[in-house]
Each structure stands twice: as structure tokens, then as C-alpha cells.
Image (cartoon, rainbow over the protein chains, first blue to last red):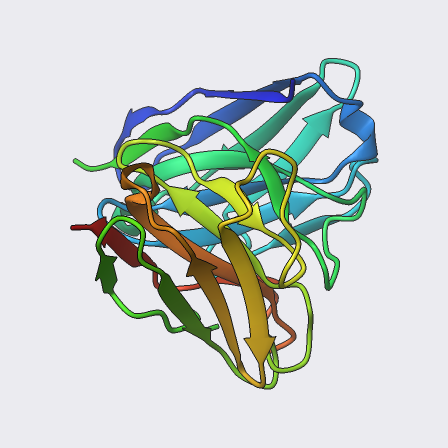
Amino acid sequence: EVQLLESGGGLVQPGGSLRLSCAASGFTFSSYAISWIRQAPVKGLEWVSAISGSGGDTYYADSVKGRFTISRDNSKNTLYLQMNSLRAEDTAVYYCAKGNSIFGVDTEYYFDSWGQGILVTVSS
Amino acid sequence: QSALTQPPSVSGSPGQSVTISCTGTSSDIGFYNGVSWYQQPPGTAPKLMIYEVNHRPSGVPDRFSGSKSGYTASLTISGLQAEDEADYYCSSYTSSSGSTPYVFGTGTKVTVL
């Protein structure tokens, strides 16, 4: 059974930094791209970032490009999201989601397993 | 990138059918078959219900079906059950300007009367 477990969320001041982790199990981690997807309070879903199975290719939404960095450690089956220069509008529940392909971007890509989510609150 | 357009809410009685629309553009739904649908009951994570327009993952009841015509994708729930009450989101690959490759719909709340 695929399991994804996020950690590292919490309260941070505007301009601050936070690193999220996503521990994976139940599948061959290095064979699949993983994404971060967020959901602001009482709002819809927003794709944030993706990384290929090898970790060699990364992709970002325009809203976080230059501030967030996605990475993975395939020896630890763990995904990361380093978030810098945080803003109030980054407040959301952040989900890690496994994709159906080793590639982070694909025209027929979908998110077949999701973690339970972790709350990040940016406020002074 | 603008979100795909969904109706805010739909409702139906147990046993009835409801259909949720998801309207995009020629840069996403209109050109690609990478349309997927997700179910999100209150307080839980999204769950994949349909992928590649009309394919159901193992374990998803066959009362859930998907289709696409032009710029609009649709999710139909036949034989509505109380457990189907949730928010539903569509998603698609997009080639519109900018670096974001995936776009989600605005979300639809399904209420079972």
C-alpha cells in the first residue's frame, strides 16, 4: 500500500523559511515523480512543484518560482520542499502526491496517491 | 494560468445521477487527454477517481464515469449515494504561457439530499 506522510509544517513569520518533508513507502520511490500541491483555507487545489524520479528535473509554479526548492533523497525515500521568503498567501495545507510517471511533467499525468497534508501558516 | 471552471455546487437525491462539468481552453482540456478527477470529503486528502478522461483506478465504483467534448470534461455519478457527498476537482495538463504544467478546477460541492 502506498503511503505518503508529510511533516515540518507550522507557524512562520512573513519572510521566514520552512522545510517540508514527505516520507514515502509502499512503492519503488525512485521510479516515480512526486509533486507538492497546496490548498489555501476554504480554497481549491493549486499545483506547486514537481520533481522527476531521478531528481534531475524540477518544475515550479510561477507563484513560487525563485522562492521554493524541491528535492528528493532516493536513498531515504523522502521528498523535500524548502520554502523561503514566505508570504501570507503561502498559507495552506501542503500535500505531497505521487504521479503515474517517472517524469515530472507529462501530458497525461495524474496524481494517484496523496499524503494526508500538513498545514503551513504564514503570519506575524 | 487560470483555473478550470466548475459549477460551485450540484445536488441530487440518493439513486439519482449528477454531472459535474469542467471547462477549459484549447491549451488544456481542448487539446490534451490528461484530464483527471479527484474526490475530497470534508477534512480529508483528495482521492483519484478518474484519469485520462474516462479511466477508473482499481477500487473506484463503476457508478463514477468521465467524458470529454471539446473544451469541457464531465464527471457523472450514477446512483448517487450518501458517501459520495464531497468536493470534486478536475485537473488537466496545460500548455498555456508560464511554467505551471498542471491546472485544477475551481471545485464542485456535491450534496446528497
